[in-house]
Length: 102
Image (cartoon, rainbow, N blue to C red; front, side, top):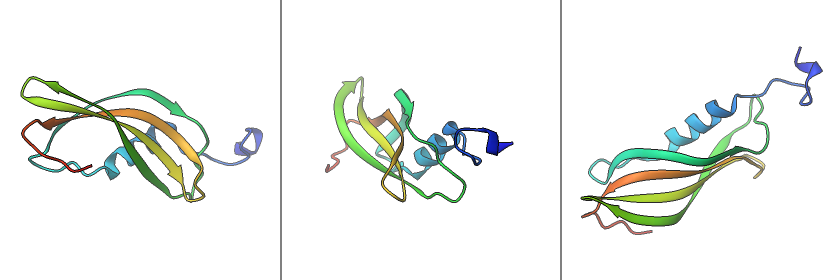
């Protein structure tokens, strides 16, 4: 059946890759209050069985929201060969009295 697709083999569902990558992010107790959301999600290339992924993050925005702050990062998910397979803006709510070195 997979031979009939453009990829000629089975691929991982994009949301599985996004979920696994989000799970790689270290939510520090006392610093991170909550996962706040995702925006601009794009699945740019297939991820195949046997591929290994890693995540690269870049802070693009910070703003205060009540007693917390919201950090927005570009979450770029890449395969072992450096190819980007998904990209999204991830928002994380943090304690505003926390000093995080970036």
